[in-house]
Image (cartoon, rainbow, N blue to C red; front, side):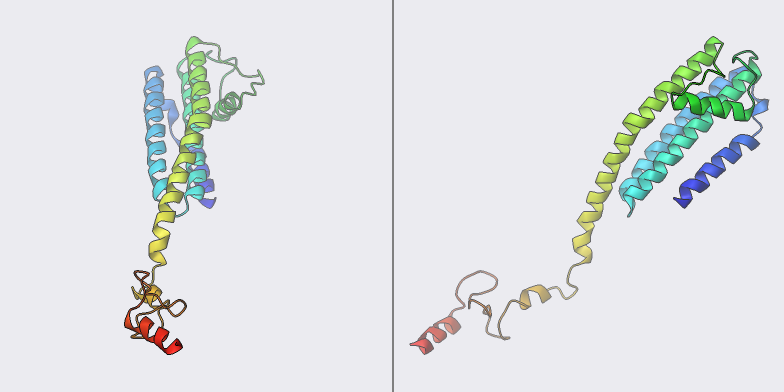
Length: 209
């Protein structure tokens, strides 16, 4: 969980420190499309690391947190850039905190109404965020759960190998009788094929008579 916290702090810090004011109206759309591709690439990479991780459940939590935070910071940046490039796109001018606030209320479907998209571009971006949020919560969470199951199966398949007897034949020798008899100490049968052990078995029968 410490890694998830560091990722969150790093993304929010970058959001407040990056010089977003340099981008124009065209740069907003390009940045949003490029950012969405980055979110998808990070998500695919996280799935692969979950499958290979020795702790897939913990890795899935970190992956979901990182993908979600990157998604939210991306749209907050896009809203902030849109308001700078086209003033009046929202009901009030947006600071970086206002843009992040609007992103969170849109994602959580709370929608207090104090800030709303007024321009067509702003509304399209809000609809993209809503659709992406639904996919992230539904489809992405399901994919991560499947990756966790695959990681657990992979981890379970390697466990017997690590527990194998380094001596090789130690497990089979434990079921044999005294060394050299080739018999099971319990039933007198060969421990490998299940048949009577031959002369030794016959000798025991003769002695019993």
